[in-house]
Length: 127
Image (cartoon, rainbow, N blue to C red):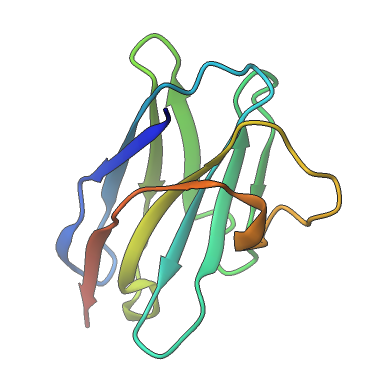
């Protein structure tokens, strides 16, 4: 069974940085993809970034390109989201999500494509 546990969230001032971590246990399929989503109250979950674990290829939302970086420590089975130049609009609950086998009927940023989810970690950016 796949389990995802996020950590690293917290309060930060605009312009600052945070690194989120997603500890992924049970994710052994080399074709797996892992993504970070975020959500604020009253809004749908928004995909932020995705990583294809075996290839190392990535996708990013336009709103975070050149500011956020998704990466992994394969030995530790941890996926990171390095967030720089944070702005108040980055505030939200950040979730780690995983798909063991990619369904090509979905775009990378569709929440329905991911079968496993963590409980989230809160990021609050103040101006």
